Length: 414
Image (cartoon, rainbow, N blue to C red; front, side):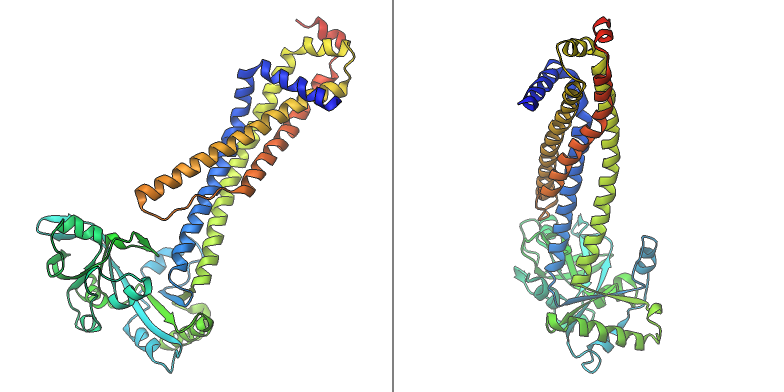
């Protein structure tokens, strides 16, 4: 019953000074809203990337040139490495070397734009294997067909384009059979992908797929691959296949010490684990920054409560003269501080969730990504809990000062 009285008194004190209470709670609101927003976006990004990775299939293995990046400085070396070549592809396709490999698609990316009769568009241009690509991502041309193995062997100038590319270059007219130009070389359109949006790491609508051999010879002037996408015969044989790939490539590259590998192999589970670690680290770092802001907000809370204690000195003296104990005064101001931070925490959670939802909606609508909004329940509970702790920690000092005031001096205070 006595606690209810303290609670009512604290509520009336806050209600009397609405503007000051609102300003006090503002820092807490911003801090907690930031935490919810950061965690929500982080989880949304993690879900998006993991869904894209898993869509490749558990039996998919990716081989990339260069040493496996262990930090930001290693990515440049990996990007320009030329360690995967045709000889490696031929070696991996031999059943004696890797019996569980079903097929392999070499891939190279081509920067630049495509044009048709004065119309120009800048899509994603990929050199690969049309049949492998269509089956792996389960997307087959809506018009026309994929290019064949003969086209790859003969370095044919053929292309499959996405629906957005067709719309930009051809409008409502047919694209199949016409010629587009990439880096001043003409490519005959043999197929058009249906409208599908983002699939795995590719936006199918803005994609131009050509034979990797053609891209290497006529567009890039290179003999190496930027990656090899390998399909094992089953998920159960992925680990064995990874071992076979490593042994085969080390033998082909005359490598005896695994520390000197000039390639690295990634499985879908490995990618999933790496992505979780990276996004988790980024989220933790951003949350730590926000935590500093909460501490600053707590200091601001303490200062404002101290000002409130000074302004309400006569009220404190009057309550003590009427029989209130130091404990009563302490509890009143402590409850006020906790109420403020609790309300700020709840409002912050709601605002953070609202902004997280709006950002998710904007990404889905304007970027065409299958981004799902995730409300971080654990982060919300933690945020409100932290805000209450901030109220307790930073409210104790001003509450003690209020409780220690002499009733006689307090009543005399002007």
